[in-house]
Image 1 (cartoon, helix red, strand yellow):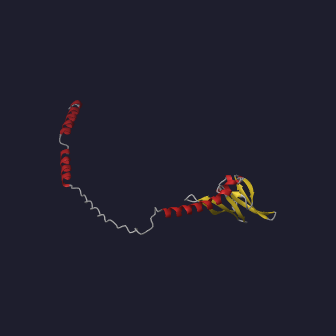
Image 2 (tube, one colour):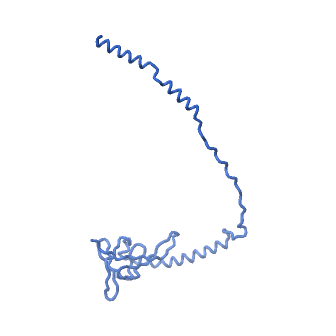
Length: 180
């Protein structure tokens, strides 16, 4: 047998083998059978709860929309706003000091001393050293220095709370040890 004949026989046998059933029919039959046997399990939706109306029991209570209640609220608000305005008005009318341009968290107290019998704190801001005394202002929240101690600086700040009202709070600037 020559090589040409052997090659021809091999090609023909491969072509005939490709035409024979490949088992696809068996696979298709099995898939159809499995689809027919499988039933989806769906849980039923629970019935909605029945609505039970509640009786209104506040008939004898004060009407929230009465004119009396409104005038009381307006009087209370006006007295608060005048006290808050009195708290902030002097702060807005005075001339700002240089250290009020910097936030308090960018300042570092590096020392304290007594100068002419009065306490003085040394505060570093942007690598510049400042001497501050009680009565000076620091920070952006109208912070007035109330007390200068050996290890801390106590400020009285005026800030707005969540409701927009002006309130006083105390802030401190602690002496910072130099890290090596």
